[in-house]
Image (cartoon, rainbow, N blue to C red; front, side, top):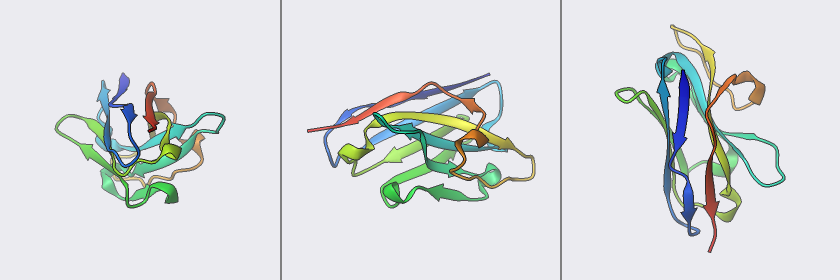
Length: 128
């Protein structure tokens, strides 16, 4: 059972990156899932989440209109497309799973403790 995050890197302000989080050993479709980030000297915060059965999608205000969260069911993978990146987006990004439901459960960006299974982080650096 594993979540494997990838896709981080260094980009210029205004650039784009796509993060992927591949799940193995379980089906992501039945979990609320989310992307979180922790910048230097900051607490971990929710960036985007997706309810199981795609019941809802939530974004933190700072990324609305720039980031898109989605689920690729064929690859059992969670994706975060990040456009128009800013230096303040620099952080280690983590994917995580939250509540399980066969019938669909909504996601929340907080509290972070609601998410109990985490992938390793992938570093995103936005700098000129």
